[in-house]
Length: 422
Image (cartoon, rainbow, N blue to C red):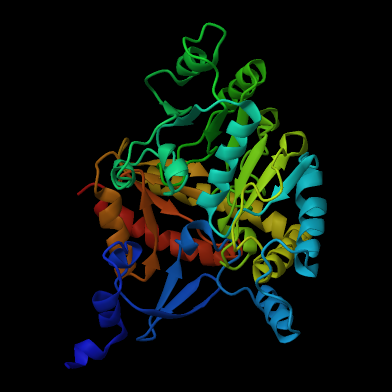
């Protein structure tokens, strides 16, 4: 066996499936993480602007959350509990309802824990919408990403992901997203849901108010309002997939808080819900449509008590005005930094997209964002691309200081300046 064969990196090549992806763009072995930093096995430090694709809004291993989880384990608290009642779940439900749902006008929603992954929250939402309405069709939108299990995949538009299904993906109609230049997204809505629609109304409309994997497209408020109006008129349910855009990522806990007229019937959450990257998902259900029979939607890992404990601890952030003020300041600073990068380049070379701390840069030429991502990694910055390689997506933790953000933004700006026009 050679020395190379003994390295941790060789283990993955030898034993892990070819399906792995992120590691191909960042080919090192990480062994430590804290806050907005990662360290590889050579000791090199990286700034993490990927943050678990939005699963680490409070950074890596937040000390207060880790301490709470460690104390729970030390005290012998149950970890696996199916959907049995536990003190950890009770604490999370009470805090989440009192600190998040009620202040934001969602106090009439109950919480379902469908399992540990976001795609499971989407599956539960689609099933419940079809059960409640007695209809099968769902409307989703271009650029949407909702998961890779078959129901959620039918509403996901990536050709790569859809092609792996191996079976027809049916009962979902894809319409243009709300910021599309053409075809007209408002006209498409009217055609599908308006009074003169050629087809029966669907069970639900499923959307992200900010599209993560689709390229940081942001829904116009007027379009969201029209979705709600048409849904009300046709008895259609509105499902918001807030899995990546939620938990503070866009500046408010939910991404749709500045569009109160949307009033979603169902909200899918996951990623940063646990506060430290532990698997956890939830479906928020307007109480009057919570028509599940006991056990009708089931799963072994619906009671991840470590995630409940961590999620309860994470909610402390939302009682701290210093955190909420900082999150708003960081969102503004990110937009200012990106606008400065755009201003330093020729007109049309790049544009700012997204919302709050879920923002990035869109380049007209495919592959530009990928080249910049590679250069950033060589400079010690981990960042993601989306939108078929057109968008450099930046997801810093909400806990990064403004000074630390400025430092990494300068690195991003210098890299973009070199590569965006070549």
